Image 1 (cartoon, rainbow, N blue to C red):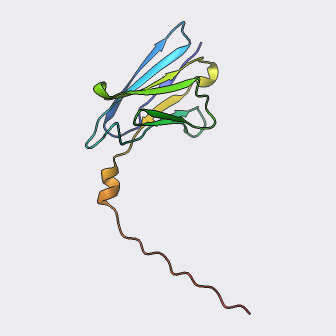
Image 2 (tube, rainbow, N blue to C red; image 1 turned 90 degrees about the horizontal axis):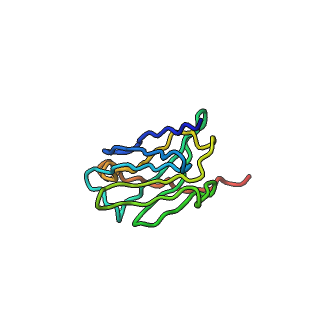
Image 3 (cartoon, rainbow, N blue to C red; image 1 turned 45 degrees about the vertical axis):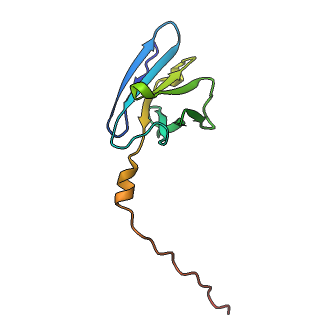
Amino acid sequence: MLMVFFFPFFVDGAIQVQLTTGTRSAYIWCKISGKGFNFNDDYIHWYRQIPGEAPKRILYTKSGSVSTDENFDKEKFKASNDVSASTSNLRVDKLTQEDAAIYYCATWDITILETHRQPVQKPALHSEPSV
């Protein structure tokens, strides 16, 4: 029996899952919302967390372009964005027992960083005198 778990992790969003039996594929989509989010300018990240391990990023999208991380098969994990529905979609093909995990969709609201930006002074470089 194959069990695949999904969980959202992002600002102002929701996630829904469709696991189609017989096809050995899972379709995951999350609704992206939030002040100032733009599908053309902002990154959407997809993560997988296998029980007992840290989450690992599978891939990320920006402006319709998908970049798959090194340790993940780009033929197995496919992503797309539906701008009109404000959703990011992940398809996982060729499901196996190893795919039983929690899947996360993530994006960040840059306005938090912008409002808390502080000037930082670089430390002065100096060399110690030789003896």
